[in-house]
Image (cartoon, rainbow over all chains, first blue to last red; front, top):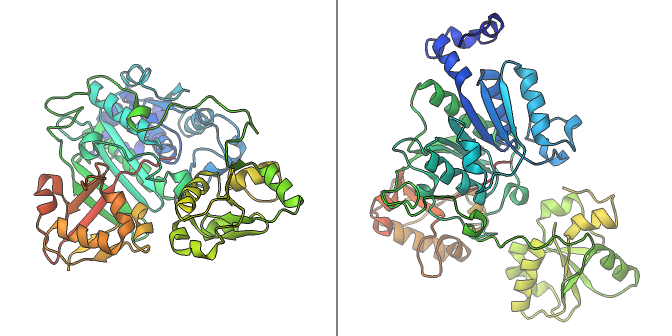
Length: 384
Length: 91
């Protein structure tokens, strides 16, 4: 394999460094890297790894670009909203570097296809956003002996390391089990600083390039913690656990399992038609509007956070954030007819569970929250 | 006094503080005092049997207490105890 004249010109800043040079650039060109997810972490990784000249980059994604992605998923543009992320990502990557090969895997990574997809690559970079896929990527990488360059983010905080490197620890050595569903919020629930995945994704991209070149000290056996607010990097020691169920001395996980079940997520219920049947104790957005129009007397309790209330609210609602209910429920009349809402309906259900224990009885959960209100009743209320 | 670093997802249970100084000579004592001061933190750190949850790791300086003496790991006045929960975000 050789570099063309155009490639030599393109990669000149690499070629003049002894740590890369012609040999290193050819290693990058021959390398095959799989990026799982083209979202917050995947965007900067895909852009920079394409620019660096990684010869073959596989992308796994089946999502569609949404306006709320653009604050951080810089590989997609405003013109791409509504398009499959994989198409928009490939377009950006080949625009930056037409000398690379991008392989599309427009699918969710599952226990059925993961080994088949990953086996053709030299290493994997994990840019997913949920625990089941994290454990799936980890186990598949351990089974196939492919390094897994890991990064994860939450609000202002990031973690990065390299798992499944020969002799090094894996994700399960660090966290043998996932948290129960609902205990650790996702970015969609908790928010994320748009720049954060740029920093963490590029730590991952750096490790990918270093592993391919065999240069420097790989981030193996070390967990990098990044705190954007304090602007601090810290490093903690990681060890391979001899008791690890997948990479330990006596592994009990020798093939891929059902990761949704492992993470305590019940099998998806059959999809409900939009505006489908309401469960007991629920009201939908149109029902709430009708209740208001009929002049019924009731309390509309909003359990979101004050900064969400600032974005938009349903007229007549009173705000007590879910976390403050235990201290403030005395402000409410336990005899009053009450409708509780949040953004999507999850937190309001938790609020109702709590209020029941506090002696409230006339409680109704608003299905779909203020998002449904915006969709079905008043589109002037912004969605976020 | 040893300093306990609180990760972002758990700050909602510590009056939004990112670090708290807590007296104590071992990890067990320090986390015990911490969860007495902030009771809501307790169910997020410990399971019903009172064991540290397996998606939460605790470090003294840069060492995982699972490879030291776990709850009985000694902590000096200048040491930092860090709680590191697993986070999955990436999009």
